[in-house]
Structures are given as structure tokens and as C-alpha cells.
Amino acid sequence: MSRWLPRAYLTLVYLLLYVPIGILVLFSFNDSRSGYTWGGLSLRWYQSLFNNNAMVEAMWNSLWLALSAATVSTVIGALTALALHRYRFRGKKMLNGMLFVVMMSPEIVLAISLLALFLLVGIQLGYVSLLLAHVTFCLPFVVITVMARLSGFDERLPEAARDLGASDFTMTRTVLIPVIMPALLAGWLLGFTLSLDDVVVSTFVSGPSYEILPLRIYSMVRVGLKPEVNALGTLLLVFSLVMLMLSQWILSRSKR
Amino acid sequence: MATPSDLFCHQLIRRFGNHPAVDGISLDVPAGTFFSILGPSGCGKTTLLRLLAGFDRPDEGDIYIRGERMNRVPPNHRPVNMVFQHLALFPTMSVGDNIAYGLKRQRVPAARRRQRVEQVLEQVGLPGLSGRMPSELSGGQRQRVALARCLVLEPTLLLLDEPLGALDLKLREQMKVELKHLQKQFGTTFVYITHDQSEAMVMSDQVAVMKDGRFDQVAAPEELYREPATAFVAGFVGDNNRLRGQVVSVSGDRAQLRLTGGAIVEGRLAAPLEPGASADLYVRPESLVLSDGEVAEGLSRCRASVRTTLFDGANSRVETDIGGEPVFARLPQHGSAPSLSAGDSLQLAWEPDRARVFGAATP
Image (cartoon, rainbow over all chains, first blue to last red; front, side, top):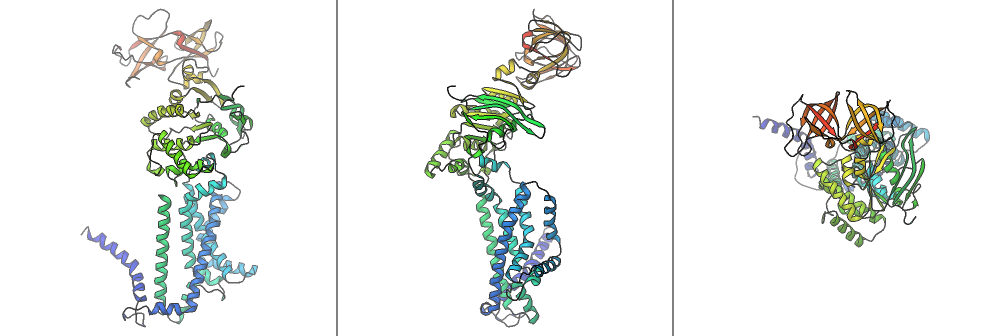
């Protein structure tokens, strides 16, 4: 009794988490037209997905956007974190606090204000507006991840490198970046994920010239979901698993 | 001047705000010396070391390393390397890469680097460990890697910032001896800072005792111990007892003091004092002779009462009380020690030449 109850509870929790995903994967190979009945194994939905040009284009758009947003926010975020960590300057506390404001404020508020800003400045809604918006909401996550890593950073390491003959640039390349690499990677992946599945902000700041995946799927829901979506979900799942394993591999290599 | 000293400093001053952390330090360290700077925390010794390493610049004064002025030379261009307090080994690099780091900056070819790394690891007693990560090493091994990382560059000067502080007591004792051997073996000039007087005494050729940004005394360990120049040095280096009193008479370099308890005692003056001046007499525990009766001619003496005995092997002591102040005396180790218990009265005697009299710090 005392043994099976915790196990049953744990099993239930994991079932709740993974059964929907499992069903999605399973039904992506379903030959039936309906989303609710099983009609044998088939790859037809994968085929129809890749024949759906609008969908494929939206997927590439989304990947490209997530890639660039994650990269830009990692670069800016890492530099911000370094500045916040290393220097004392006027307005440091405020800058720190404002990062949290961006993180905590409802997405809808960010979305409306960004839209208003873009219209005011005259930025055409499309890739650029999406990129700026995604970098904005990814940035705090990168900064906080990198700052957490830096808080455990031995301040003597840069000095030791300098003492052993390294220039500032060499020190950064050989000592600082390897130490904060796990945080950079984690921040980048976080940004990538946030960007890839954002709906609210993207709805407001995207234009007809640049359609991205979440919005495409969302618009499909209204006309009725085709099992194609299951195939797409499965592909995204595989993709994120590969990314996860890749990051684990890089981390374990840098730790060795 | 034949060959210039490895390190020569003239009137170094470094202020933080109005507070001079280093306040007019001059020093001269000949090649091959183990030179220690000993002082309590906050005395400015770390600031001084950072000036020498180049992480900080003096407000006034000059630093010469082997005859070359270093004031404006950045740390990566000084022939000086430093072993940091917490070692600062690069956590993402193997032992070999840590040690090769400086060689790589000097563009030493890879094959030669590997050879030098293996050689220096051998010299510090860690052959074959170049593939390990620093996190896989013990405290003592890490210590040696930090040393090897500097020594492989053959610096003119090796600075050490209390590197033994993080080790446990037993290992620290062992490393003290080891460091001294390594210094002799490499022949590199060491500048070692510490607040632990025993570290400084055991390892050094010369010790500078630092207080409030200045050197109180620079001398060989034995001289420091036997002939402290100031009351601070007398109290800081080694165990010492302080008896407070007033000078009643002076003859030559001898002074007689009346202690607060009324007893008259005698010691050697460190600096001239007038009768009537407040003064402190310092006498070391091992200079005190215990007796319960007659005392040899010519010794100064004083009655004391036993507080407690402290057994610690060869370092066993008895704590006594003279006029309300604690006075420690070494217990003889040849078994003839009188059996002592709290409240017993006994006589403490000493050779007046082995007691030092300083003017009291505050009037």
C-alpha cells in the first residue's frame, strides 16, 4: 500500500503529461481521414504536409525567425549581463528592474505597445517587426540566465589570465566565454523556444508578407484541423528533442 | 650597482579615498630570495601585491623589476606571475591546458609546450596528471598545479597571495616545507604574503612585518623573533607575554619596570625611555623559568599564581596570573615539571636580556 500509492501517483502524472503527446505522434501516422478513428499506418499526412506550400513556407519562416531572434538576444543579453555584473553605473538598478518588468508584464500589453511603436516609427509589419518584438521578450531570459552563471564566477580568473600574459580579448575568448558557455547555450535555447511558439505578440506585429507557423496553425483551426497538424507536431517534437540532446552534449563536453 | 635586485620599490603609496592602504613602502629583494610580507588582515599587503603584479597602479613611488621600471607596464607584460589566494585555476581547462596557458600566450610551439608541461609537472611532483580536470584534484594537488602554471613561465618574480589559506592544517604544514624546497629548486624569487606568522617564519629568508600600510621591521625570521624592533612585531611574531608597568630606572640598555601589581622586573630596552614613562615588557613563554623556591643569581623574577595548565605535547604551557593579566610559560618536557594546580603560587624568572621593553603604545 505504502509502496504502490506513490508509484501510481507518479504514473498518473506522467501519463497526463505524455499521453496527449503520444497520441499526437501516433495519429500522425494514421491512415484515416478523421482525426478520431484509427485506419492503419501511413505517411500520407507527412506527404500532404510537405505538399502544402503555405505550411512549409511558414515553417521555414518560423525557424529562421526563431534562429535569428535567439542569436540576436543572446548576443545583446550576454553583453548586458556582463555590464550589469561587472560595472557600477548610474541607473544600474533601474535597468535591472526594467528587465523584470518586460518579463512579468502581460504579453498582450507588450504586443499592443510594440504594434503602436512600429506604426508610429513606420516600420513595415513583417520579418523586421517580428524580429524586434521577439528579441524584446527573449532578452530578459538570456540576461537572467547569464547573470546567474556570472554570480558564481571567480573574479580572479580574468586576472589570472592577464597575469599569465593574455590580452583582454584573449582572456575573454579563452576564459570568460568558456565559463559562461552553458548559460549562453541555455539562454539561446530558451529564446529559440519562446520565439518559435509565440502567438500573442506575433499576432499583433506580423504582416501578410511573412507568415509564421503558430499563426498559420491557429488560422487553420478555424476552418477545421487536418491531421497534417499531427505530422507537423511530431516533426517539431523530434526537432526539439534533437536540440535538447545537442545542448546536453555540448554542455557535457564543456564540463569534462 | 653590479646586478640589479629582482625587485626594488621606492616609497610606494596607494590611497583609496583619503586612506593610504600602502603608505610609503620601500623594499629591496635580491635574486633567489624567499621574501615574505607578514601582517594582519587589512594591513595593505594584498594592495601591495596587486601593485607588484600590475593589477593596480601606485599613486606615488616606483617599482623596478630587475632594474626596469614597471609602473605603467600592464600585468600581461610583466615578468611576474601570481599564485592567487583561491588559486584561480581555469575550471574549463585540463591541468595540462592550465599550465600551458602562459606558454601558449608566448606562442611556444605545441610540441615544446607539451614537453615543458610534463617537465614542470614532474618537478612539482604530479607526473602524468596533465589530462585531469582541476575539479578532480585534491587541495594539495591543485596548489601544485597553480604553482606549476606560474613556474613554467620562469618568471623573475613569483607572487603568492596566501595560497595555503584554503588548506587544512596538516596539509598546510606539509606544503610549507614543500614550498620552501620548490623555491630553492627553481631558484625563483618568491614574494609571499600571509597573515600566518608561522608560514612566514618557516619558509622565508627575509620577512617584512607590515602594519597600517607600512613596514615595521624587515629582517630574517630569527632576528625578528629575538630582536623585535617594535611592540607590534614582538606581539605579532610568535607567542609573547606582555607585562604593563612604568620605568623606574634605566642603566645602559637595561630598564627596571614597576608592574601594575607592584613587582619590580627587568628587561632590555628596544629604544631609549625615560624613568616614569609607561612601558610594556615582552617576554616569551620559553624564556620563563618556573620555580617554587630559589632562583639563580642575575635573573629577573616575579610571583605569579597558576590559572590552569594547557597540555599540548611539546608545546604544553601553564597559564599564570600576574596582577590580573595572563602570562603563559612553557612547561619543561623532561618530566621534572612541578605538579601544578589552579591557585598555586610560583616564581617566574627570566634572563633580563631575553625580555624586551617598549614604550607603551598609548600614554
